[in-house]
Amino acid sequence: MTALTDPEHRLPCAERSCDVVGIFIVDARGWVLLQERDEHAPVAPEQWGIVGGHVDPGEDWTAAMRRELREETGLEVPEGTLRIWYEGDQTPETKVRPGLRNHWQLWVGRADLTDDDIVVGEGRRIVFVEPSAVEDLDLGEATAYYLPRFLASDTYRELIASPR
Image (cartoon, rainbow, N blue to C red; front, side, top):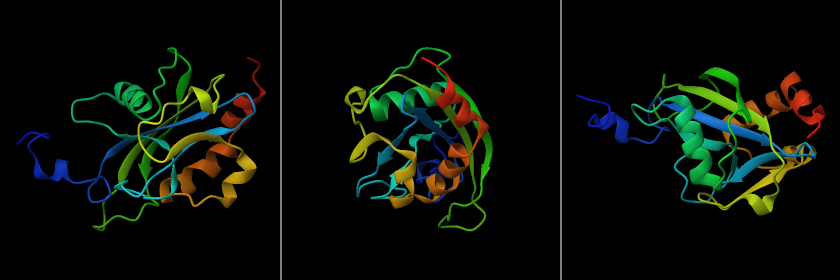
């Protein structure tokens, strides 16, 4: 049985282990691009989340990152704009079935973009959020885990310090 015909593959990532790619883009102000998910989202409905999604069977991580970014935001950033910040098993997310874990690859980068450059392909809205406002948002579980770690990282400090 291939991954495409495996009934497990048809389940949403909330109910099975998935490879998941996420993207944190930082603008010139140091604000981070986040997605406000709508009520139809299979994971973290009506919460704020990371732009990204699952890696399709047979798809490599870079292709998945580019596809998810394009599908959700309409963006196609130049090669080298984004780099991998984190890769590993995501442990905080509560799954329907115990023992399921997602494997994450989080890409980050700085881009001279504004909210007007974003074409919302999924969710209620996708906007740049001021880091000090993050604590007031209802963050999805994975976002609540990874975003504060990213904002506290040397990588984030480098991104906001680099001239463009």
